[in-house]
Length: 448
Image (cartoon, rainbow, N blue to C red; front, side, top):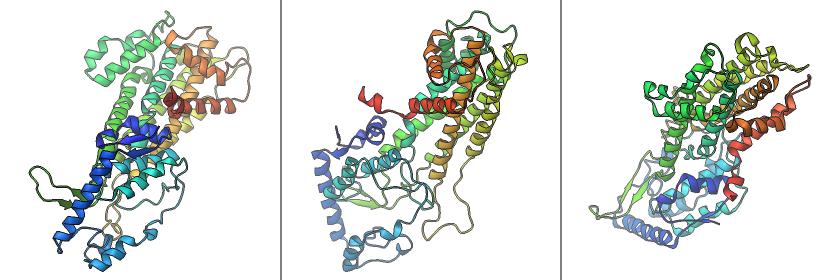
């Protein structure tokens, strides 16, 4: 059912999920449309009351023509001119969910009248969400100063991705029989961090009821630091979600119209840089970095499990003629690919500066592409580590702890235990896609 948007308070992550991922439409409530009509009237009154007023893009030109004042006749032609010349970016397209998110986020500028556009125009933009196929938007060549609210497309799946990572690494820890002291409850107070305490508690819950026999000495470093590295991913997810919630409600128009109100009897129009979301690319960079670190741990865990002198398990986890040693080589490749993707993005500093007034472009789309690639690498890395963890239990005739049994069952649906050598590429790819579907496929969750 289409959403009815009455105020910026309706721009929540839950509603974003419905529109961008679930395909729901959105429109404005009668009260919002009436407010738009009134603010449009107030804006036109402001224009008529002050012939000398300068409003970017209304009484002046755009960009490098911002200093040029327009006559009333020129303003009319300017308003009627189609902006075809600005549609020049080309290259790989953003996913449909991101484009729908762009449209939805844009509606926040309209709902309370800050864009000073007519209700008819606002309703037409919202009407785009009735269609499942929107125009393609390039993720490349985006060097202009403006940007969309780019964090919102990320939020859905972040929590599920966190849960999946914790489960797979808990399976790895159980496979190598990590001493329970590595994740002891007492560490929560000793470390003094909320995210680390939550992660320690989650790992203990996932491993509860596992094999009573543990390693006689400490596990490798990559296992002992696991709670703290997972906690950094948890912090990055929390920060990105908070930034997305703030960004969705933000007014990003330039200029922005403020209607008369208490303490301000006159309408005002301000030119701003609200379209520049300074939270977006650092949040995505932090997500990519946290995922790259987890890919590195997945690589280290895989190598330790596969070699009996470290894992104290059958070398290469063989049972019968099974052999999984080559999986470690694939894991190295994904870890390196994630590390290369997770490079810090900065505001561009080229000598040319930019075109006209657009002298600073945000690296939002570069950061989005990087975290998307790092995420795909992590999904593949978790699939490999999950397969190895499942094999470790198989090779030693152990059952998974109750909380991890569904994960092991899912892994074995796509990649059954290896008792004789076979080609595993197709099965690993299927498992990776299953993990990705768990993180990104929200249609079934929305239907429940």
